[in-house]
Length: 341
Image 1 (cartoon, one colour):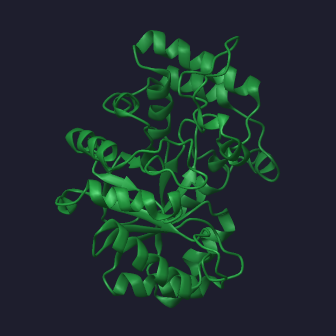
Image 2 (cartoon, rainbow, N blue to C red):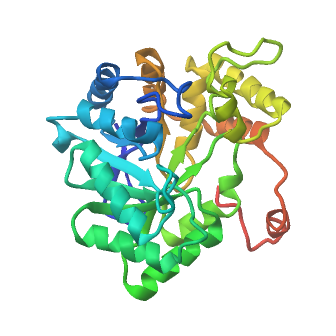
């Protein structure tokens, strides 16, 4: 398994990370997998055998059940794994059960440590930007967790460019631990990450931890032009469909047509090719893969160890290209602003 540095740090992570949103069956996650300890342990076994040592969770996944199940699945082998989790989204009915305040982050981190059965979290991330909490308050609380030895590295998730840049500037100005990772949505059906966040990451040394490289299942190989929608899909769940990144149907078909052509040439699956494309993009440190079962995990594990050719990359780039919004389309016309991709 290939390992890459996580942003501008000395911390190496495997290029694939197993996401654990399929662990548990809490509110909002009923259609994601509902895996218990036995099934989760089997997936962890397969990952470790393949060299995938990093596991990503969040305190709001099934209201903590995902972390509890992951903790049980790695019990007795903490020294073999890297743990990544997140906090900020609502986990209770109280006024402070949400956000990036010192009160909530300290409480959330302690809860994650307890559920995961560990003393230290390798990568701790803000799940989203909290506009009500001052940036310096959140960063000071995270820095304190690092200095206390409860967290090793910091990341954020789903930030816009100015959110991330302001946070990095505050960290530098105050001498606080900085974000070395940004967990962001990036896929062939969602390339907005390239417009501002990728150039920022290149300039500031922030590694991308990519979530949903298959576009919430759209590039899993079950959706094709002229075929009925798959009976089992996250997108069939009303709650999931509501928050899934919007994509025009014709765009999905156009990309899958290109993936099918490459699949014929390479013998790889549509999903493997889609994940491999993301792995070959600038700033990407690791890609989070999910799995409902062993078969799905084994297929996704096959996305590494090979490379798409320049012609194949060009075909996928063309099929997935979209008109940029302002000011990015205007900036792209200036000869001194080459595309980072």
